[in-house]
Length: 155
DNA sequence: GCCAACGTTGGC
DNA sequence: GCCAACGTTGGC
Image (cartoon, rainbow, N blue to C red; front, side, top):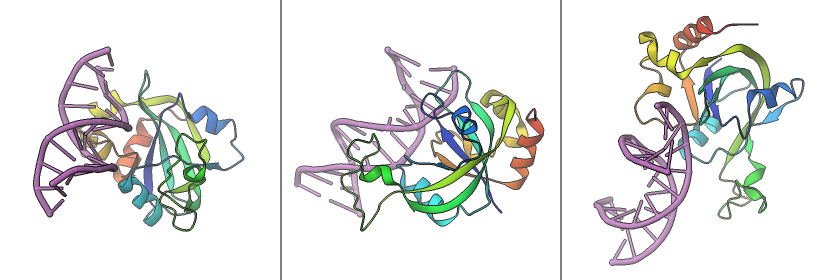
């Protein structure tokens, strides 16, 4: 089993939105970056655990954990002309973008803030804090996962 | 294949 | 809103 970090802008989709549908699965749509797409398609597997990271917001950081409950399949928003994520260059026969389904596992009592993460020398190799990194789907090593879990206030 | 122009991400 | 650090596009 592998560990991941998925970024989301909470003003668009937050962990509270995920929590409000806790017993349902949620399609993680809208990934429009090839490197992130490749990870979703080739490496993210059923049962993997995912840190949900809030970005572009007052307090960026890790808000909780989700579980992958369906492996990669075509992101339907790419075919919808009404969608913000519509891609006219993609086709149903040859879908360009993929998504997975996730389900909430845990909401942290407090966000593990980017500030805390940056302040921890043991996490300086994390993709998240490497200079210039903007990847929205990132692998997390088991070591980093355990350190971050220990930093989180669990319910 | 090169690379300039442009668009996006995301912290601050 | 600023801007660094990307990624993408398209002419050549």
